[in-house]
Image: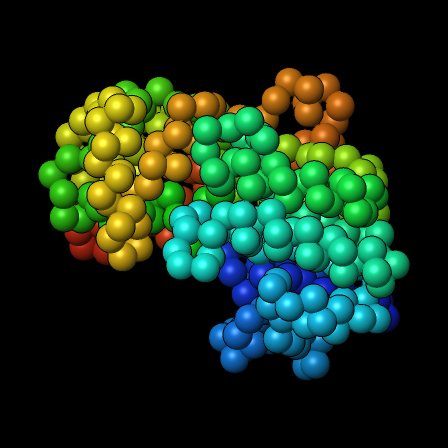
Length: 325
């Protein structure tokens, strides 16, 4: 059955990406008309089946051109900004996308009188961080606070889900490599959060269930080290690989060259980020600015990972060795 439309329109910047697909779906389920603002609308057709006929449509928008942003938010009741990158390439730098871009979206919302705004940042956003990624995220948050004080900021830990860039990447490496690197000894702590839970948090914030102007830190129910994450991935995929500790110094040297390769397997910025834990802070927990504070019970890694990592098993989905465990 289709959900009756509620008569409201939300513009989602970056709605065709990994997180975007889930956010668009969550909003469509609630009856919102969804305008997906992307650089290439022709690459966003896969979103249309997530809603009823005509409920979801894509428009062209580029963060570098204010007029395109103004058209994208015109008539909207709410805006979600999900635009972000994990590695720099050409003109797509951290500052251009996550600092300048966030400011441009916030300015467009301010000019249009839109205060119902949700901005996607990340745990670890810090203006003093040695990592450009974290600094640009902090600059984006500052722009949101300056121009639209009512904006709700979401800071997730590392995301997992069918198209994630963490478990899929290392599972792919394990197909060919006899060993996997444990950067910094694999002691960095993460709080992996399911992309569907993050999308639900964004949708609830858009519907007014979050505290206006607050920053929410989103983490899953389990805190795991880098080593524990890789061990879990290897167990699910049924592969035995040597986990080799790699010092931050050596990893940084290797990253200097690897970041020049297509797809940037490892960047110096990522190595710098791994020097700090990526978990929900005690302050966020105390304030109730977490998934639980939004009434969301986060799902576990074990309930989701096997559903998409099966393709990395030697014999795929029906690997008897895995099912015999």
